Length: 428
Image (cartoon, rainbow, N blue to C red; front, side, top):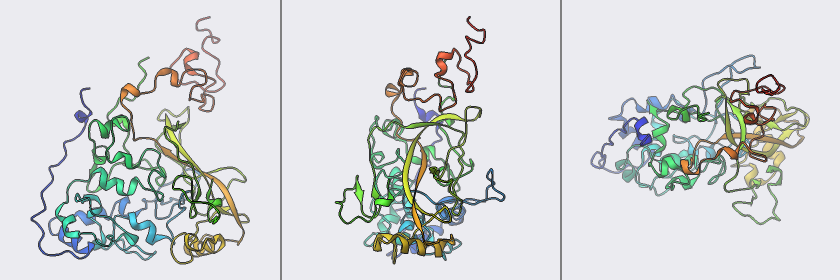
């Protein structure tokens, strides 16, 4: 292949908007109303997307009696835990204006934020409740609009979880202008996010198993690449006044954490789907609670061995009722202001409806983040011995193999407990 652009549809030519606006624009809603004069259906399209609703359509999950609807709107995580009761801070990244509590009107098209995805001025930023930050020149932003760039997408996605490179492991601010070694697609070929996350009627392609439980509207590496590549802790430490703060080691509002470069991923079978811990689910005794465990195993023909960043944390749970709790973190009475866990958990219980007995401790949790960005050039790709050698990165037994499958003389998958092919009569 000469260039990956062979697989990509051509980008639509952006329209120059600099002469299409007259007079001042004082609010984000005024910008949206101006946009809708020409783009009549755009807000209605946005209002049916996950970027707007932060919640999926109901989906049946194995082991549950009725469909569930998940998303940022109601899912629990092990970073800032959840948005309920914390709306005004979390919704600074919502593609809308004015979401400050549970009464936000998702049917009001005037609150759709066009600029967060289409501003090209570089001067548009959002603050609490998703409103334009003070001092933003809305007229300049409106005149600059064009196709979404990495700057638009990265403004939220590179800083998820409260800071640069906190969540995903393969999304951070280095991708604004990466070189080849950081990401060959964005660096060498100047891909924008929407080149892979292709969009129709404002529905952006792709799913995140941190919030999604189905495989609808998914994208994958094999959309362009051949599928067969082988030719042959610690929230409980938050609130400590005695510790010095450091962005990459300790913050009073969040506790301790570890940043690493060139971190070797962990490998699991993954078929594109994941299970989901939902608010109110019981914990499994003293076991680590996986909030979004990937689905798939060695017997699943649709699964592939996939690299993951696994985020390990501790977060509050009810020791009597045995379920995770969502505290109020930001705003009046929240943990980030008062540093009082009990108060924050009581407030969270009132908002979410999840009972709180008054007794809490901290449970170990994990979140799985599939690594799909920051792809190195092929000259730096892993070689065979990175996986197939003594002491290499693959834990073949944990993946369901009796040992390294190359040593078994077959490229086919084998189940744990099968006899080696040589012992089964082939080659001896």
